Image 1 (tube, rainbow, N blue to C red):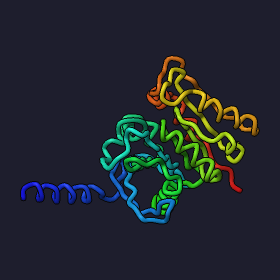
Image 2 (cartoon, rainbow, N blue to C red; image 1 turned 180 degrees about the vertical axis):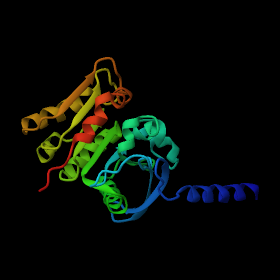
Image 3 (cartoon, rainbow, N blue to C red; image 1 turned 120 degrees about the horizontal axis):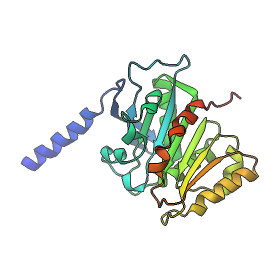
Image 4 (cartoon, one colour; image 1 turned 180 degrees about the horizontal axis):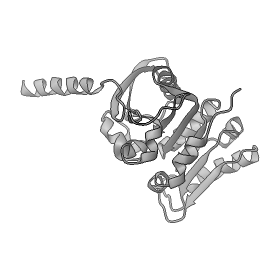
Length: 244
């Protein structure tokens, strides 16, 4: 009986944790989305709004979407804070200029870019987002997800930062004009550097001008160095999607 009561209490606690967004805080949120088969499911994510003292741009805030790696999949949202922007919120001052959303992929799944697009649309409607300044970054599985999102929705992002991921080179022509900075570790034995090499080469052949940083001593964890790069956030803040 005690176990049952505890389980019920835990479930209620999770639900209660999903409070409304609050300036300067990273809060657990949930959105009902449809997967690629049309089935409804709950997409849970962290949402961090800029601190109240930050002056909102007239057109709204830039929106950053972060896609985590395979190790952070599951139903414990705290896992998503292990790496990248959700870990750095409140510590990296430059992130105060973004609305940062960090969804969690369920166990055993890969990123469903259609679900991520639903999250982007929801946030663009419910928060003061500048739709010309939506950016995405992801590491490992999230790097693959970032490349995949670009291929499926080439007209949504103002910029992208895929880290130690890969994609389909034949899709590069679709998003050749999207500003992009890719990172990879030369000693990566999980996702080989060649996966990023082939995407960058395909973009260049298509007429794109991607930026590419290889960390010569980094293994699979090239994201720690990437997200510590001082000019990265400044570069992202400078990007705007051209009106069509």
